Image (cartoon, rainbow, N blue to C red; front, top):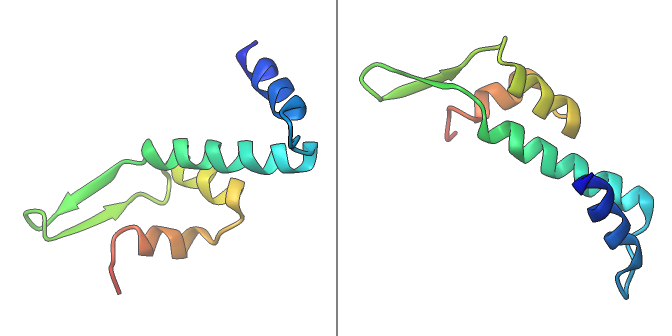
Length: 80
């Protein structure tokens, strides 16, 4: 699989990436991909937005990075 090829190449590059660091890299990449799939709902003619607490991508993102679900849900839609 492509994943196996990438994982193998990370191990043999001149600097070498330890397996524990590879896992962290893949976790961050997976989280970013889930973040890109979030459904952000516009409200009040685009003046506000919300993210459903049931959004599977939000749940996966928070789980992968170990961030608090309600905080992430808030900060995705508020500047302050």
